[in-house]
Amino acid sequence: MKVNADNRVHKEYLRGLINSDVPMTKMDARGDSRLISMGAFLRSTGLDELPQLINILRGEMSIVGPRPCIPYESDNYLPWQKERFETLPGLTGLWQVSGKNKTTFNEMVNLDIAYVRNKSLWLDIQIILKTVPALISQVRETQASRRTQSADKVVLSA
Image (cartoon, rainbow, N blue to C red; front, top):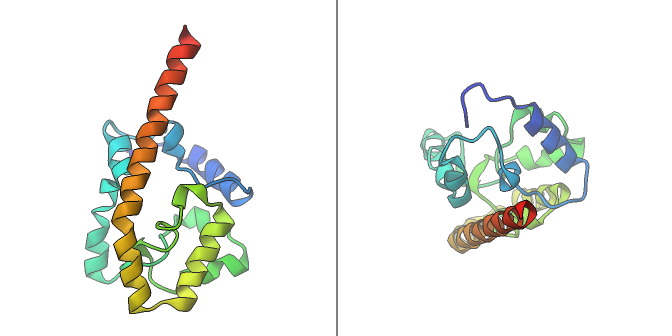
């Protein structure tokens, strides 16, 4: 992200996702002015998450668990949705391997709560094994979406 980027647009985008029943696509799927060059590539491949390994080594995060959220995101949570915070946040999780960008906010929260309630070594292993195929699928979908957007721009400008 760019230094001192305005996050008001992101706050509104999150508020809209939380209060709607639409899939949780990343804001940068349609172009995010806050991204630095190469930022879209890093985000689409998940490489932007690698620094989180430091947080895992510090014990602040786990490999598997609900994704951490931004404080201004959790300010919009309903009381029942906060159950997802009853375990360490993770680099990957049940939501990420269960259709991530095709699920709504409430579906994400329900998947995270299901993880919290059923957490086990076996579940973690299953999630870890599903993470790479899910990431590959997500990268392919992002690339296909960008190709479609580029083609649409060409058609619209013609």
